Length: 227
Image (cartoon, rainbow, N blue to C red; front, side, top):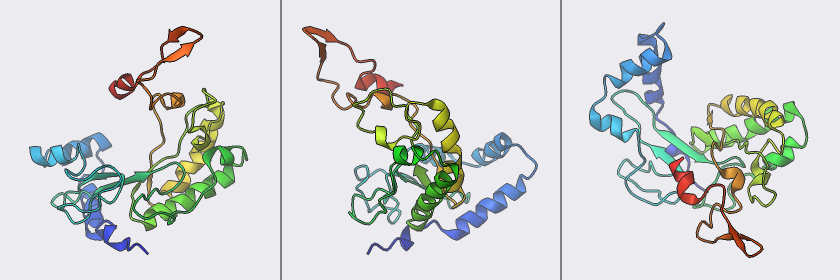
């Protein structure tokens, strides 16, 4: 079984964050952030803008900093300034681990949960996932998912809480986020662009046709990346 303990964020680093916040108590979040950035070198700032330099997405598990690439998204911490690393992991349906198949809880899908219209159940669903993510060392969950079901053939509709109703998504996502974050994991609600058109997202080079006349996709792959 995977030993997750080595991936946990250093507790002393979190203690440093508390001290840093205490030193700027009473200041606004923007002012506290500015005070922290003012203490950073250019190299330290740049490190915050990208992940590890080695290894492919979702697969790498060895880096110079001792395993900081274990997650889908990784941003190195800053020991000097007591900034903990960001250990982001997919996804809206639970903890993805391509390196260790069959080690993740098979949670009910987001659409299944949304069909319950049960706010209490949504909170518990979020709490359960938060416990698993925290236990495996991730401090950011890349979920829940909220895209509207606009295209029936969208292969990811099952992930999303909204179904066809934005009000439903708005109502149900709140207890999910509260549940996840109650377990010391940051929830990252998504997606903010184009994923409601996922039926053609991965096939930008294949034209769609209506009869004998080609038609244009609302968004091609290049445009989604530019957005």
